Image 1 (cartoon, rainbow, N blue to C red):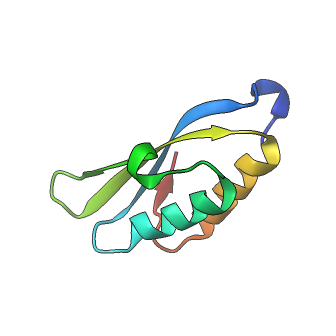
Image 2 (tube, one colour):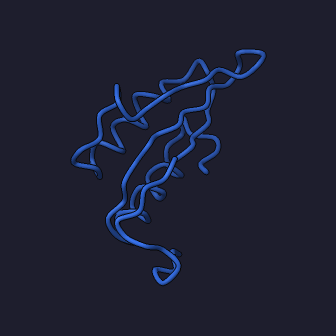
Length: 88
């Protein structure tokens, strides 16, 4: 649960997601973020980096969150996604 008094909204942050390199991770994450963020542009706001051995990929999304409900909805969907191993 998000303690809203600890956040200033709108809140800019770097959302980090990791998953297997052979999974459709980027497509899944983009679909989730586009659902919840009106201005999300994968080309401008998303970068990826493979792990040293190439087994995993790390995605970093630059996002601006407007309220607690939005934060909780995004994390809920990311954590439920079978392609996502870690969300930070």
